[in-house]
Length: 230
Image 1 (tube, rainbow, N blue to C red):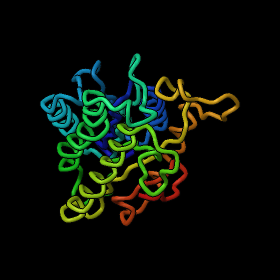
Image 2: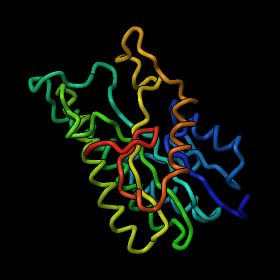
Image 3: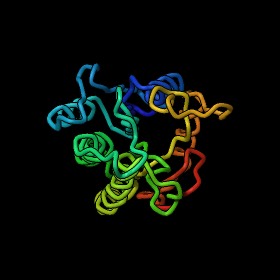
Image 4: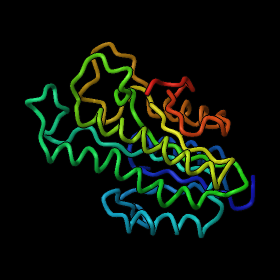
């Protein structure tokens, strides 16, 4: 194990985030694995940039950040379900989708990417979604979630271009975790659908991240490592 290498999992109280955190903890490849959420210490709230900056400083003070996995995401809440048609569009729900699925992760990149090592391999990965692919959109619907994840993919791509100039061995990527048995996907799980457990998804995601080379930075990948269309 390297000296003071740090892995950071953001959204560590969610289904996939918790599984990733636990897998990294048990693996022992990092000196310390830090789980961040609105309930952690320090707390990290995607809607408060000051909390993101404080959390990034806290992690950087503990050691060299080699891995950051953003496992946050918002799809539905109470009676606010994904839109089925244009008549369902609501400005507040659209704004919440962008705040949590695009703007929040963008601010994570703003504060965590500069703190990655400049001369060592490091990875920043954020969980996107295949439904955010414009080229793969055949069914329509889910306007806010699709649009916010498409925006996230563009933010990842753009941040990766800038990151390459200063951190040539670092990666910034978007990953589709597949359909996982979590609260986020539960209302949309079809009968007979072969759902992954969070532990299965976590293992696949980490395996893919480990195998990516620096040329993959800025890419959008399935948990299996397959490149997905923009």
